[in-house]
Image 1 (cartoon, each protein chain N blue to C red):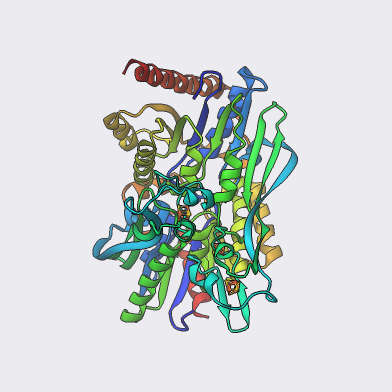
Image 2: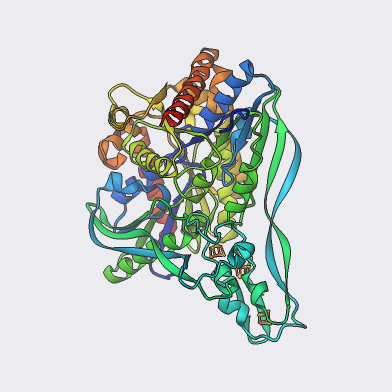
Length: 298
Length: 290
Ligand code: SF4
Ligand code: SF4
Ligand code: SF4
């Protein structure tokens, strides 16, 4: 984080359905009131993008996300089979008279075109998803990636979406669930990662994986416990043991669940949450500046 | 697809709709079955079914580039041709490397090669409810459709060996490679959804994916009383698409309690949710044996 640029905070969860998007959008709404025109929300959960359902943005532009896939000119091709031999993803096959490509499996690496001795392969664009740009009535700048159904390679779409991060704004990234590549590629863009979890054995197991991932990547993290209930100390105890900040507790509450079902954020449906959400952000900033100072002192 | 052994995948698109709760209950209700936890990124079924591992192994699913420093002449061809910004003349970024082999063919000095790396573990286990195949992806690994396929294969082999009639698959969320691998060629998909706008949106996307594979779809609504209008929308959606609606389960906080006690809900407490799951299962088993 350079001095001029504003921090990027990612919101992640070890599994889906813990309230990650609800928290990310609520945080964006609360912050947009005290920092009008300076908040950006980027939905990087490209397999199941949902932030629009809670923020109701006006979308003004769609940018396609393309990858390069091979196209074989059969008139030039000698059926030598080198392309198929070198492709690590079985995405191109030479069968007697034909060369067949499997765009679903293709990693768009370009190896086949590189090794083809006669230049029979050209690479052509194939759309695998899109990035939507727009803004909400509260002036939140909104960016959302979407993987096309039937396409399985989320990475190019996640990258294209995450790279819309505007340094001059406070950016909230809604990360894909889990701890695998798409999640890591998203939180890599951030200065701090907020992990949303539930106080259940599922929630705890997935939280441990998320914390391990953040630590390995050197990204500071804190925890939001959603659907919190008395008598479920597992997650809280874990955080105390590991020295991880618990930033917020959101109680198990049917009214919150109903508001979410209607497509409303916490900040919209329950104004009393507003200050708490802003406080979470301030805690994150404080923790970041302490880490920065500690680094300078080292 | 195997003619004798039937395969059912429980999916949701969106996480947190109760997919694993439903599947764990089916595991307790169904007979002659093997479970396959294909949600390899956030495997949770083992937390309910508490399996004892009897067999396990490394899963070698991915390759990465490895450099022989003695042969490297710093030509920089690898960096020029790699499409994934994964390699420089001094470093290889293991997270970014796709294992495509471009650097290997581009290196004029033969200094690079691809090596297979272990990116997780598979397990074959016994539970109180029957055998179960599951896996754990290594933290840095790419979420892998191939690991899902492997878990399914282990389950299918077990079913064949022991003459079991059914593979119960806990599907992966999303619509990417893991979700697709858990759905391909199964006999039926059960979509567990909830009447939230995101739940509906994600259900539609995962239904489209099932259509992609020609897999018949049935639907179960969880927390159905949370929002009457959205529940109506899901009902209409099922009618329009001719999907059988298997039931509507009410919002019930004791569901997480069962989870906290690590037992399948149907064995933990009787109530409207349990009853709904029982009915859904009896209808599903009819449909599967038809
Ligand atoms: S490498 Fe080129 S010439 Fe050889 S089979 Fe492939 S496309 Fe044809
Ligand atoms: S671009 Fe790469 S993955 Fe795609 S067909 Fe060619 S060699 Fe295979
Ligand atoms: S194998 Fe492919 S992705 Fe990996 S470093 Fe080489 S060129 Fe880059």
